[in-house]
Image (cartoon, rainbow, N blue to C red):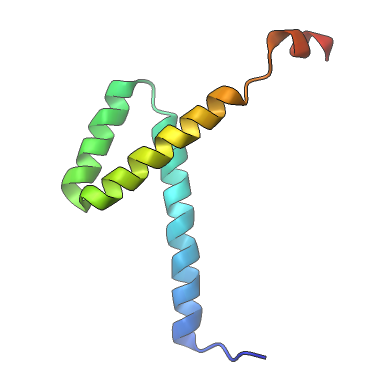
Amino acid sequence: MQETTPISFFAEIQGRTEEFRHECEVRWVAALDTDAHRSIYLSGVYEKRGRAVYERLRRDVWDHMKRAATDVIPIQETLAL
């Protein structure tokens, strides 16, 4: 059995927490009312956290929105329920 040190445990939890934070932020940005609001938020991310974080967040928000758009159940199927 592998021994877990306090430092390795913290690193593991930190990684999971950071990934969870990113996933929450992606959903939140995708849920904003308009593209203009998303653009304003993302420009702030670019200014405060840098280009790499901005590009990752922008890409993940776009992917999330595309997935959500294709997960819509056609109206004919909802009427049959």
